[in-house]
Length: 112
Image 1 (tube, helix red, strand yellow):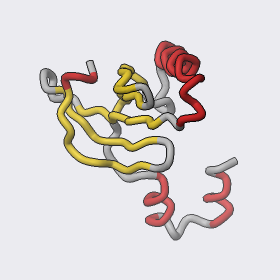
Image 2 (cartoon, rainbow, N blue to C red):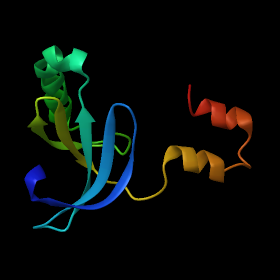
Image 3 (cartoon, one colour):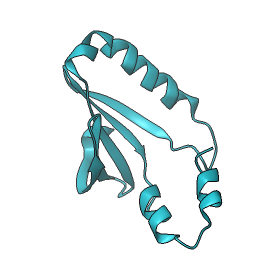
Image 4 (tube, rainbow, N blue to C red):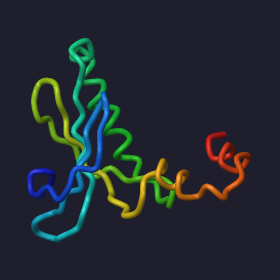
């Protein structure tokens, strides 16, 4: 339940959303809470957007390459909270910068 988490740290954000590392207060398990800000022109599509997130969360694919979605909360008329599985480590941009010895062609393969 998204309402039973405490914020640990801000992870980052952009024009669409901000993300925080949060911890479940009853289990001490860490998650990522993504706060999605809906643009005014998308408010009419909010129900479709929520249904899409619920559908994707329901997939629950068992894969090391898919981050699991655990919950969704409607914060306000123009924002949502989505609770995701948390993985510690560095973000992809940092990984690329820290692996400068990796040949450029190998780095390119990561995107195609």
